[in-house]
Length: 170
Image (cartoon, helix red, strand yellow):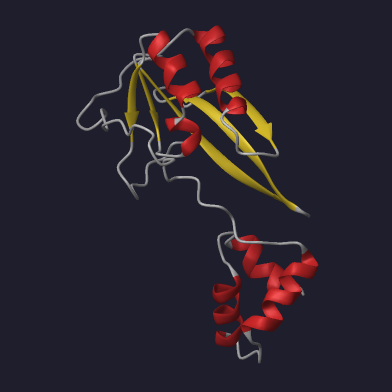
């Protein structure tokens, strides 16, 4: 089981097929059925992909291309990080100021519902006021009505990274 645990903790989006392939490359004799059974006993599973917008949610354009960020509270960003636990994951959302890289607020949850993200957003807005632009990925928490309505209510322009785009959000 340690052979499964090591690559899974290094790359938590590995599922049964990827773990099987990884172990076979290390000359271990395994099959998918055995790996699936052992992963079930260990209560580990492939990390969910939350960077895809929920069906029907509006996708906003990327507004930061060519923008010079030269002052605090001009642009903030938000992202969710997965914290592997013995049984599943906890989810950490952080709201950061793009210029200072300071974390304005954060929340931890055991579910990926939008509510804990909106709570962190409210705390960040209370501490530093609304930014001009909020940048996120296309995750359903950030395309949800609760998140976007709160930002629109504060007159914050919403920016979203392109699909598959990597930016240092958190």
